[in-house]
Image (cartoon, rainbow, N blue to C red; front, top):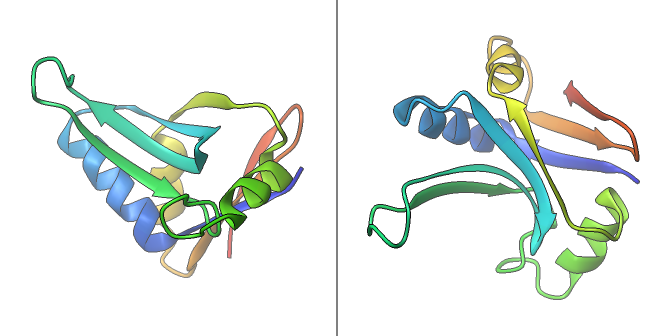
Length: 115
């Protein structure tokens, strides 16, 4: 497995979205790409909103055919979703010195590293 990379700007946008909607969790998921995000509302009620931030190289809209292989290399072949405390991201933002958040994914663990 490998490391997913997100920019500081992506993390800031997701945290702002979560705070705006009083969400205390975000998710890390792999299905059509590899991403962090949060959703609110429902399409049925016409109030659905989301904030999805794709890992570097894992966005199906931007990375052509490479997103599938890259997502699989980083996170394995199975789709998954993990809900995580927003505080994990908020703590990283307290340090102004980093530009990228790396999420190391193994079969049993997620690790967050800033650089």
